[in-house]
Structure formats: structure tokens, C-alpha cells
Length: 616
Image 1 (cartoon, rainbow, N blue to C red):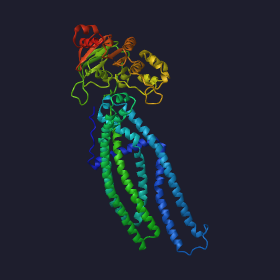
Image 2: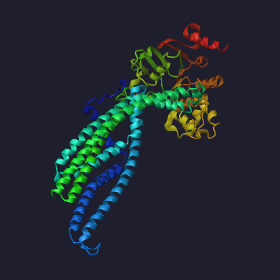
Image 3: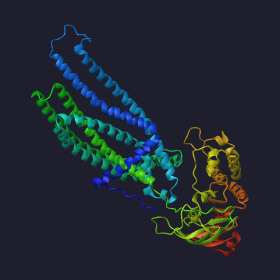
């Protein structure tokens, strides 16, 4: 498993702008999101880019024409049909048309890019979900990966302004080139003055954008904690304990402490950015008025016409604003591209479980079952072995129970069996073939696992059962059969809308179930899967004694001919297994039937007697 991500130092300009390499694939992603809208937006932006140049040039022509006409004797009666005024009239109408077009184009751009941003957000979120589905469980148990995933998700939902930034830059660049060409034709030195005035501000803005990202990067874990505290303090799943234990003051104080730290960090950065920004903005303003004074002086000397004065002063002012905005936007894009680095970095993640080039078919039916050969495993970053030296068989068609105290390695063993992890040492065979030689998807499709911390989906009751084999969710008979096998049908049929009843309190109309009722639905998922290997991790923990007895008897009946693994702390269930494996310290300490283990004494007999004593 890859090591957790470390905060980036972003100490050099190369580091800060390296993330721009992701802009081309980002634009390709934008085009794939909605090709028609992407092309429409590009065309509209180009038209908007040319409009200010045309409008200012038309204004110059109007001023020059008015000055020319003012030198002529006035007409007795002003007439729109008088030939001398016709050019001015057409120029004014042209400027009016350009103004109307500018407004219309602006609204069309906003409309097109709002839709495009939504499509991009949808596509990006789907890409994240699709790619996350290909990654190993180990990645999701890495806090560094969780931070990266959180940043990528936030980009998908809130960073689509990057699209408008990039398209806006392209538009501004075209306008800048047009205005710059005009300045070069009249006074090339104005461009040099403009760059000298604006580049320092651009560098400062780039620096603070990088600082902003670095601060956001460093705060990712704390932000997830902040969200967790906020949700814990006010959610249906935690409300009972929070109220009973009086946790509101504690949670509110923790939220206040975390959010105050966020505020102080962000306020400090904002103050420094505002201070330096004011300084560099003042420099840009001074450069404009210096240039303006020179242009006025040259006009008074006769070098420029009044129209030229209008065009040059307007062009320099707008060019200054455009270049300043362009540099700032480019710097902002470089900052936001750092989030692209998170997005595309996530999409470049690859599963660590090896995939065979030519996988062998999973045997159907199983003949021999599973064989653990000196299997050991430890989690990434841990020096302690979760399990080690496991050497035993799980014969096909046998019900095997795993027993041991918390931390003995029972759930880890199940994860290895379902190939959520590969052993750190040793190997696991299925009918004599290493699990790593099978296609992972086909292997897992043959295994039905219900973990003790199963998910309570905010879906309908039928869909909650169907997740065991979601591609069969349209098969109502199969869903009802699976629910009947786990005795969940009794729960579902009491609901107002039965199998169409939404479960959970997240959405209006949802019904919350008891822990035992949820557990029956979770067990139904294993039957829905119709797998040859059934694994139930603490399947009856929330059931009362009568329900537990009924569920386990049904489990033994319906698992006939299948390989079944049962993890339970309740010996009333365990004792009915064909064989029991006792785990301690990550190793198999003993195995046998209930009677054999009781006769041998040892840990199993001790634990059984301790539990039995509570019923006497």
C-alpha cells in the first residue's frame, strides 16, 4: 500500500506551476462532458473578446468625426437625412449594436457555462466513484488517501469555476492581443510600462494562491474532523447518545476550537494578501496615470487626434485591467490546478492487488475448498502481525465457526478469504489454485459476506436486500426469497409500503428499524447473493435469543452444500458448526467440534463456561 500523502511545500515556482500539466486533460474532460456546449462557449467567448476592441475603435471614429463636423459651419436645421451626419449616425448605431451584442453574449456565455459546469461536475463525480470502485480496501483505510479523496470530491462539487477561469483567460488573451496591437501602432513603450507595473502584482498573487492551497492542503484532515463533529452533533443516528450523555457542550466547544483555528489561519493569509494587493494595485494605478499624462501631452503637441486620445487612454486603461485580471486569473488557475493535481492524482491511483494476465476460472462447484498455507498478514504502517502462521483447511460444504477474543484476527482472516487483502506471507488456495490466479471480480461474486458493521442504506427495503446482488434488483421474486430465508420478510411485510418502503431517517417518509431488524435485512443480502461461500461476521449480535436460534437454524439448513464461515461471540450459535477454529494472537490455537474442544479444556472451554455462567 502506498504511504500516506504528505503536505506539499510548494517552495519553488516550478512546484507551484507544475500542476498546470493537468490543464490539457482537464479541458479534454470538459469537452467529453458536453461537446456541443464546450464548442458553443468557445465561440461565444471569442465573439466577446473582439467586441471591446471594436467598440473602442468605433468610439474613436465617432469622436474624430464629431470633432471634424464641429469645425464646419452648423447646419440650419439638424436633419438625420443630412449627408454630413450620416456617418456619425451609422457609427452610433454600430456602437449601440455592439453594446446590445455584448450584453446578449454575456448572458449566453453564463447560460452555456452554467450547464457545462453542471455536466462537468456530474462527469467528474462519476469518474471519481467509478475509479474508487477499482481500488483496494487498503487505500480506503489510509488517512492520506482519504484526505486526497476529500479534496478531489470538493473539486468536483465546488471547483468548476476553473472552467470559467480558463475560458475567460482565453477571451481576455484575444482582447489583450487586439488592444496591444493598437498600442504598438501608436506608442510601443506603453506595453513596457504596463508590464513593469503589473508583473510584481502577478508574482505576489501567484504566491498567495499557492499559500492558500498549501493551507487548504494542510487543513484537509482537520476539515474532515470539523465535518464529523458537525454531523455528530446534529444527526438522527447520534441524537440519542448525544442527548443522553449531554455531549452538546463538548461537541460545540470542539467545533468552536477547530473553526477558530481555521479562521485565524485564513484571516492571517487574507490580511497579507490584501496588504500586498493594495500596494501592487497602487503601482498599476500610478502607471496608468503616468501613461495618461504622456498621451494628453502628445495630443496637445498635435501628435495624436482627440479620437486617438480617446482610443489610447481607453485601450491602456482596459489593457491594464485586462492584463492585471489575466495575470491574476492565470495565477488563480495555477492555484486551482493544484486541486486538479489531487483529482488526476486520484484517477492515476492503481489497485495494489495484482491482476493475473490470464486468470483461471473459479471452479463451480467447489470440490476441495480453501487451504491456508502459512498465511501471515499485517496492515500497512503496523509492526504487529494481525495474523500469522495460519495453516488449516476450510473444506467445501462445511460450516466452520471462528472463535476468539477481540483482536484475535477473525475479521482479518475473513478479509483475506474474500481477497480484500493479499497475505503478506504464505498463500491461500481454492481447490488447489492460489486466489491471486483468479479474476478478482469473479472470485468475489462467488462469496457472500456480511460484516458486523454492515451498511444501513437509505434505500427502500427491497433495495436494501437487493444490494447483495444489485444487478438482480429488478427480480422481485428473488428479493422476496432472500428475505424469507433470513426471516426479514416478517419485518418488511409489517412496513406501510413493504418492499417499497424507504428505510432510515435521512429522507422524508423513511422508517427506522431496530438493530435486530436491520440485521435480518443484512443477512438477506448474503442469501440474495446466492454464493457458494457464505461468510457471516457476528450475524446475530443484535437479535434476541429466539430470533438468533431461528436465524441460525435457517442458516444451517440453507447453507447445506455451501462452504460457510461464521464468526460469533455467542457459543449457542457456534456450537452447532461442523468445526470450530479458536484464534488467539493471530494464530490458530485449537480446532475441532464443540464436544472435542470442551473435552480438551483450554481457551474455548474457558470462554464457553464464562458465557454459560451468565445464564445460570
